[in-house]
Amino acid sequence: PVDPESVRRFAAGAKAVADLRHPHIASVVDHGQTADGMLWVATELLEGRTLRQILEDDGALEATRALWLVSDALRAVQEAHDLGLVHGGLQPDTLFVTVTEEGEEIVKLLDFGIAGYHGGPNIQSLSPDERAIRHGLDLVQLPTYRAPEQLLGATEQASDQYALGAILYHMLMGRPPFDTVDVAHLTAQILHDPVPPFAAARSDLMLPVFLERAIQRALTRRPADRFASARDMRHALR
Image (cartoon, rainbow, N blue to C red; front, top):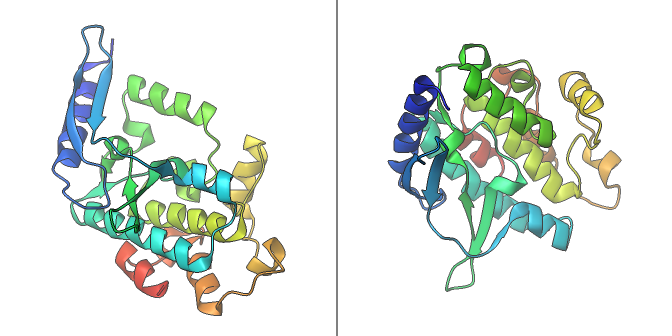
């Protein structure tokens, strides 16, 4: 069974996310625990595709489309950050793209149920159950979009910036900044290697210099060297 402290944190996190009312965050409609101890969250029903599916189907996206989608995500992240929440697990699977009646694509962020309060417990202070859950997720998911500090056991608001920078890089280049299925190699690259410039990833593509600079800043290793906020990052990408 899940220990009481994990249940308490789960319920507090689910309530905090349920209180988020933002057009680019999937609404949490209910949460609870089954008779056998499983924790669950129910979100609004959405129609569309995850960004992962779009990248697999369409390949690299045009800059205008990519910037439109990441701008939606940054608006949502800023709203969460203003309330003291951090997603901490952004990746193409957690950006859900749906289409309005007017034919406009919009992003809904998923899985904010794993969010934590900024300045709250890091990996070292989690309960054994919570560590096991996160460790299990890490075993089946490559840390492709994880910030360097997360690989060292800390998550903060700037970690969401890094993830969205890596996701935007992937949308434009057709591949993430560091692209290997070897976990040890990938971790070493994120921690130590410079982000490949656009020209090295796609020599056929000409993009504005300001765009590459903004992405490179979001992907700097030190959180303090990134943008002051998700809002500032969004403005830099205009």
